[in-house]
Length: 288
Length: 316
Image 1 (cartoon, helix red, strand yellow):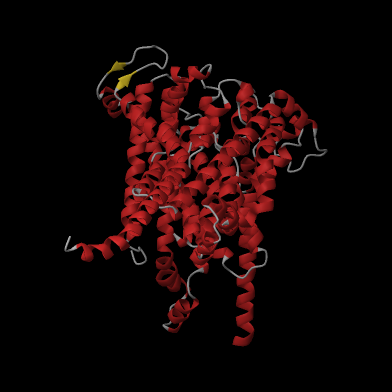
Image 2 (cartoon, chains in turn orange, blue):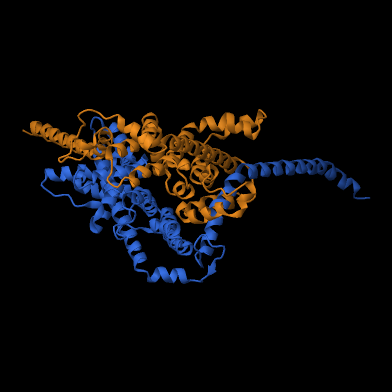
C-alpha cells in the first residue's frame, strides 16, 4: 500500500502546486491583460456589465486617438532624453567614484565614502521643494533665465549616485589584484586600467546597475511633475495623467492605450534583460 | 669634521631616499588630484541637490512663505506647532502608518508564500518568477490608472470577479473606508514580486542538511518551516522590512493618480501632504516642516537597520 499511496500523495501535492501557480499567474497577469484588452475595446464594450474579456474586433484607433489627444510624441522624446542622459551621468559618476574609492589613495577617503553613503538617508521627497525653489532662484538667470521647466533641471538632481557607487566599488574590490598590478607594470595609467581591465571585468554588475537606473529614471514621477510646467516638457508618466484627469467620464479604451505607451518600452527591455535584473538584485540583497 | 666619515655614508644613502620621497610625494599628490577629479562631480551634485536642500529645508520649516512673495516671514516653530495641532496632519500620520504597515506586511507574507511555492520542483517556475517580478518595474502612474479602471464598481474587472462569488463591489475609490485598502492592494500587487524573488534566493541558499537533520529529529513540515526556514531567512526578512518601509514611506505616484489623497484625506500620506502643501496650497514652510517629519521617520528606520544589521539576526 505505501508504495502506491506515496506517489499518489506526491502527485496530489504537485497538482496543488500547479493550481497555486495558475492562481498566482492569474492574479498578477489579469490586470495587465485588462489593460491590453481595454486598450482595444470600444466604449460600448467597456460600458457593459458583465464586462467583456476580449474585444469583438480590436479597436486600433484607440492608439491613434490617444497619441493625438496629448502630445505623446513630445512625452516620448522628453522621457528618452531625460532617462538616457540621467542614466549616463549616473553610470559615469558611479564608475569613476567607485574606481577612486577602490584603487586610489586619498587621506580622507573614509570620510568621503561616508558622505556619499549618508546621502541615502535623504530621500528625494524631502529635497523636492528646496530644489524647486533653487532652480527658480535668480542664480540661474545668469544662464539666461530660470531653469524651471528645462531638461537640465529634470536631469541634474538625479545625476549623483550612492547606491551604484557602492555596488560597483564592491565589485571592483573583488577583482584579482594581480591583473591590476600587471597592468600597472605594463605602464597603463588609471584611465586605461579602468577602461580596458576593470570595466570589462565588472560588466555584469555594470549592466545590472544600468538597467536599474534606466527603470528608475523612466518611471520617475514626483520630480518631473514638480519641475515641469508646460505640456511640451512633461515626461510620459506625468503626461499620461492629462488624459486621465481631463476626461470626467473616462474614455477607458483610449486611456488604456496611453498606459500601454508608457509601459511598453520597459516590457521590451525586461524581456531582453530579465536575467540581469533579477540576478543582480538578488545578489545584492543576499550577499549584503 | 671628525664625524664626517660617519656621516658621509648615511648622507650618501639618504640623498636618493630624499629624492624618491620627493618623487613619491608628487606621485601621491597626482593620485589625490585624480581621486578628487573622479569623485568630485558626484560629491558636488550631492552637495548642491541633496545636502544643501536638506539644510535649506530646515530653514524653510521655520518660515512662512507663499512661494511667490519676495518676503519670507520667520515664524520659529509655528509650522511644527500647526502640524501638531492639525487634525488633517494627524490623519496623514495615521494613514502613513496604516498604509506602510499593511503594505509591507502583506507584501512580505505573500512574497514568502510565493517564494515557497516557486521553490518547489514545478515546471515553468522560472518563467513564473519573471512574470511575478515584472510589475515592480512598471510605472506607478500607469499602473495606478489601470487599477482605477479595474476598481470601477460598475464596469471593472474586480466587480466582475467579486460577482462570481455573489459579492457586490464597493465603490472603492470614492469611499473613505475603501480607498486605502484599494491603494494597498495595488501596492502589494506591484511589489510582492520583489519580496518573492529575494526570498526565493534566500530559500535556495539554505543548506539541505539542515532539513535532513530536522527530519531525522522527526520534525513535520510545519515544524521544519518554523525551526529551519524562518530563522534562516531572518536576515533577509529584516532587509526586506527595512527597504519596504522606506519605499512605502516615499510612495506618491499611485496615490496621486488614483485618489489624490482623498476622499476626505483618507489616502493622504506624508509625501502626498508635502507635495500638496507646497505645490497646491503654496505653504512652503508647512510643507518643509512636514518633509522634516518624513526625514526623521526615515532616519529612525535607517538607524535601526544600521544597529541591527551589525549583529546577525539569524535567531532573533
